[in-house]
Image (cartoon, rainbow, N blue to C red; front, side, top):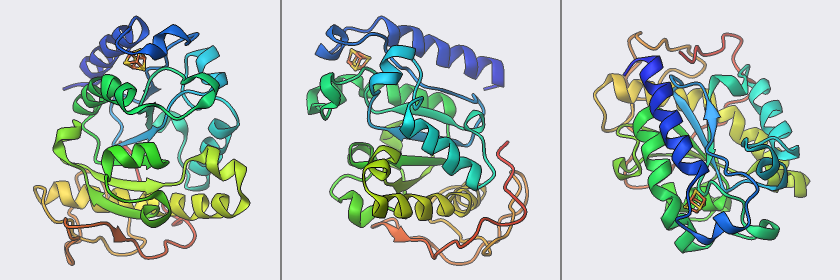
Length: 248
Ligand code: SF4
């Protein structure tokens, strides 16, 4: 699918989201928040749901948590326009309560279609509700900073999932903010792993040489395999590499 086709397909999904009444959240929303970003990105960030500012503006991650996400991305040399950002539920739960399971289920097909269109190499699951969708059966305190193959049923046919604390949680607790920054430093290497895995035709992920820059079409540095049976902790990434990864 070329850029323009992806953009049009994503806009079709967004139009449906904006008029959606599949669950009770449509009754209290100001605006639905479909998500936004580069249609040909390799990386999709999936949060929980819109907050107050997102609900008012119809855009994801535009409040303080959004500012922190932008700062985190800048720390690895990326911009928010380089990636796609969306949520598990597209309408704000009242009073910022947790989205209910039936609401998550009703909204699921929109996220699945977005992932089918974007076909990302890497999904970054932000917070426990996103984790529940992509890494069920674990907790964010155990899984953050770990990488696991995505279930193709989520819509992404051949992707890895990196778990991270949600930036909103990081704003509430300084200890989580440090964990969030450490998780962010894992992202470029997680993308390398995801690219190498796709270049190898899927399945176990070869591990790229630490700090290496792997081009989209360049040969992956194949060596060790990542277990598909459970999350694998990435070694500490340290400071971001001098040569930043090319996203497109
Ligand atoms: S949260 Fe999702 S399913 Fe519910 S009304 Fe909004 S777009 Fe529709």
